[in-house]
Amino acid sequence: MGVSLAVRMLVWVLELATSSITIIVTETTTTENTTTTATTTATTTTTATATATSTTTSTTTTSTTTTTTITTTSTATATTTTTTTTITTTTTTTTTTTTTTTTTTTTTTTSSDNNYIFIRWSSLWKFDNDASDSIENLSGVAINSPSYVTPGITGNEYALSLVRSNAQYITIAIDQNFAYTSFTVEMWFYATSLNQNTYGLFSQMDNGTTDRDLLLMINYGVLKMSFFSDDAIGATSLSTNTWYHATFVYDYPSQTQIVYLNGNQDAIHTSAGPYLGATGAINIGMYIDYTNTYDYFDGNIDQVSITMRSKSATEILADATLTTWHSFDSTPYSDSGPLGLNANAVSVTSVSGRMNQAISFTSSASYYQQQQVDQVLFKFSSKTTGQGWCVDLMGFSSTGQIIATGWYTTYQQVVDPILPANIWTNVISTYSKTNGVRLYVNGTLIGTTGSLNYLASQSVNILTLANPLQGMNGGGGCTSLSIVPNIYVGYLEEFRVYSRELSSADISTLANL
Image (cartoon, rainbow, N blue to C red):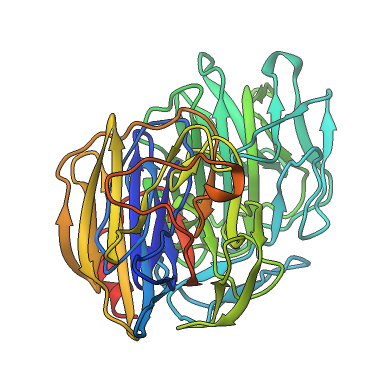
């Protein structure tokens, strides 16, 4: 998984060997003779490379590729330069209509910037040390004492851990009516063995006849969605000891099953159903085949959700790759993305931003920190103090230029001219191993490092915005080519990280919001 930073003024994308990240942030910087530094920290268990383009800077980290977009406004006085950054999202607006059936409802929250709609689920099992449904009343019961392990996919919470030989799974006895309607089931899974023919992921057993049993599984090493016949079979072979995002969609009007792996379509089957299952327990980590054999999962499962409508491909890509999203639109500040990562804001205030609300950094003690971000890079450090292993991914030079960097034994960087004062600027930084770090300003490519590997810490690190934490912790901070390790004074808005490199179409959309 990866992270990328996108801001109206800055966008930073950093790709990890196995993931990428996109972040969106809004920043304002004030300095007397130098432009202060906006640092982001992220961590990853894989390797990452970064590309950036910007009038301001944004950072992205990924195992695959990442993109970040940031918007900033700069204000200049006789002796000070103030840079304000606003973030725009890299996701695409989707329909706001939702369908509710029976007792389950879907809640939709739409951001006023009108470029990203984060769809809440009908049911969500986070598995944070229990099997409760955090939205509706479909809480589960643990069978044969499965455990909960940390970290889960979010990096700082738990995941459900199942041992196949112990016949462990979660069962939800309350009926969920899936008949004659569209639905989407999503989850993260981490298989520790794949040497058996079938591993159950999610099932609803109605009466064991065609179109009355919902069976989501790993079958012969690939994903499979089945209605007890009517099957959509994936094309991508899975590996053990790897986190995957799986999505299973049934669109009732078109009677189509679609399977997605890590946000990309992996299988499609038309003329499926209609699905008729209206009763029967839901099982997570198990299904019963036509011979009445119980097929259990072996490994970890996290963040299982049901949405009672068919999600679009754009939404699913966002669910699978949006690592973190901090809009700063309400307090207490928190991650509004699908993983709900924890954050800590110190000495900051809420102010009016370019789109909605922004966060203001006004003193040497101000910073914003997201802790225990799994597989994410920004200004990453191995300690919350900003010390230990760390990398500055975005910041300003002593002359006020925006800089996006990548790291592989030495720093590689892309430098943009000084940002204009009193104007919101969109900055996007992207990274992939092939393209390296690319920096975009207002949708225009400013420069690139060329192909670049990224050397990550191989551990869970800390992402920090606006403060290198150098003076606060008796030294430390990161060494970089040109980024000055000073405090950032200004605004940030709509900070996002994606685990992929954003496309040119994504960048154009963000730059013209």
